[in-house]
Picture 1 (cartoon, rainbow, N blue to C red):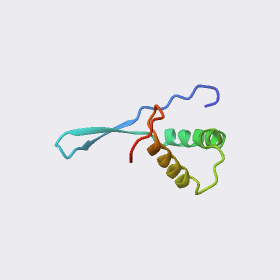
Picture 2 (cartoon, rainbow, N blue to C red):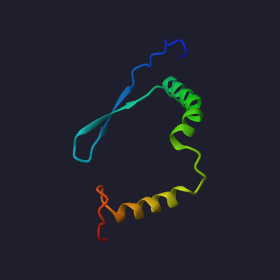
Picture 3 (spheres, helix red, strand yellow):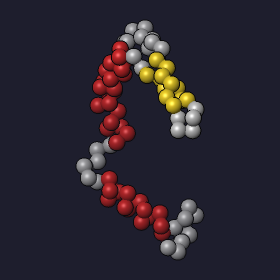
Picture 4 (cartoon, rainbow, N blue to C red):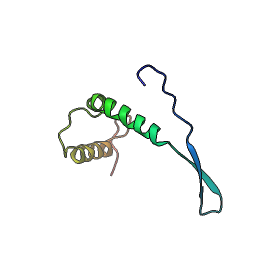
Length: 84
């Protein structure tokens, strides 16, 4: 893969019936392709997580969401006060 010579094999097309009576085709990757995807994920994830997620302490997300909600209720994009 590191040489740039990896080309994934074609996916297996599996028709899945829809409730409306039609058919939707799902693409199922091969086992070797899933192994390659997992290897790439395991290599990239530790490097990219700190960039995209920062170093937030666990359990901090609900508090941040509540703060954003309360801030967004106070004014519109022009800074004018909105009634709740």
